[in-house]
Amino acid sequence: MTGFDDARLDDVVVRQADRADLLDVLRIERTCFDEPWPYSAFELFVDEPAFLVAARGNEVLGYVVADVMPNHGNDIGHVKDLAVRPEARGQGLGRHLLVSALTRLVMASAAVVKLEVRVSNEPALELYRSVGFQAARRNPGYYSNGEDAYIMVLDLDEWKSG
Image (cartoon, rainbow, N blue to C red; front, side, top):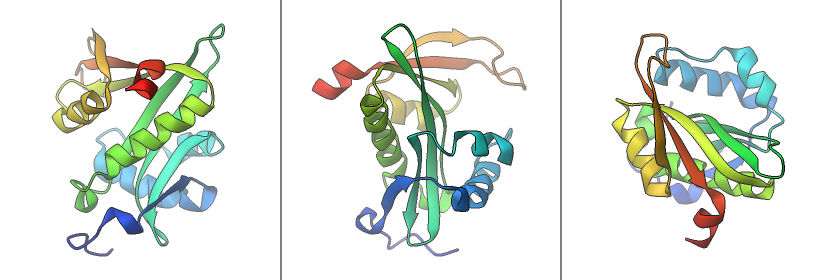
């Protein structure tokens, strides 16, 4: 693990995740979440166009997993998971990953994007709101510990023109 204090985003590349990244992604997932996804869940999404990693050289610093569901011509993007290593936070990587995923979802013909986020996760809420997501509703007891989730949505046509 390297220090991140003197790091800049100009040497970080956001690229498509591949199978070789999955163990690094899993390590970040386990570090960041109380209810981490299993390895097999990441395997299912490895070919999705919006499963991206932020990497410096061979070092994976964060990732985003998003996909598109067909919906009668108004396809729905879904940001399923987003995490940045704790020591790499505060540098704009989460935002860079999210915007890159949204761009990929636009190219994949999504009209809107949704995501779920813990109501207590202020850093994530701040990030999602800064990009244009709005809370559409609150889903009581969504998480296994009973915590509520906000279901947030973003209209990609508005986002593209904004």
